[in-house]
Image 1 (tube, one colour):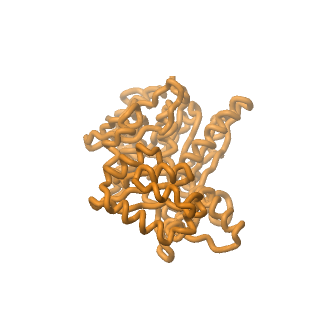
Image 2: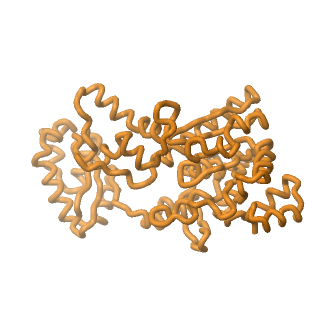
Image 3: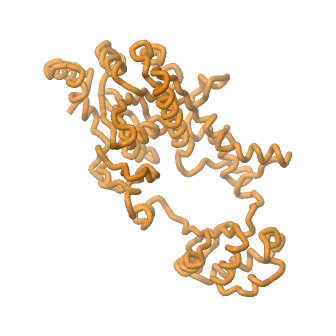
Length: 391
């Protein structure tokens, strides 16, 4: 039995933040009903880097395609809300209220309902602003910390959308726990900007302590003497991180540099930092004489931290990810079959599996409406009027 089995979730979402929250709920066993218009969620049609949003964040969900602005649509949503445990939404500020599906509208129908609203900003002077992942990375300091000085750079994935969705899940789980005691639901709100600030907390603390401007990561003074990427003889790159004196000794032995291991100047991390002006170029020269495979083999044997520089497509064949249950073979809406990441947890003897591929538009509309007591004739009439889409 999956941990959230038996819970029903109504998901009014698009893009990444809300769907990521819904994906985690679905993977953990909840019945997640993604509510989209009859023509389908616009996320389905995104191109460029948006191509992967819907296929990845929609597995294990059901699709209910209805016209939310119609009287019939409102009747259906209200019936579902009476049965639901959780609502997740990440539409623009005020959208759910204008449609008649805000927390104040749904709460009287079901006092046990947990309503999770995911926005750009929490309550405050910015709360009516629209925001996206890249917007808050810029205004929250993350882009500044990622790029070189004077060149703010967004992170290479939708890190704030995804993390914001995770905080939404944390709030939902807390509300579920509280509901066990009180019998009542809760309004939970998460936001992109405040999520970014949370991630910046360690840098804010650094600034408070040092009283100097915080440098971006490419310009930082590393706490570790060897903690960087090196070029290899075959034109590749490998990251090596030496974070203890024991690691340093093992590194020296693995790479045939016994004289470094016994050099009194290099016995401590701080000593090695003092000698980096000559030490790092010497390590660069050493790494440049060896192949990527040779470096990896030596680091692995020595049990010191290392990493090849991987591309997203390299992960499909990664031995670690292909061991066990870390990748789920999924049939995507265009028929492509791909292995995509599972929830990154080991949860006792329970395995999170693929139960449903990303659904077609309205794939579960008829099934869900019949469960509410609507007849096949009624469903067919609404389909003909364009009020719903169903297979």
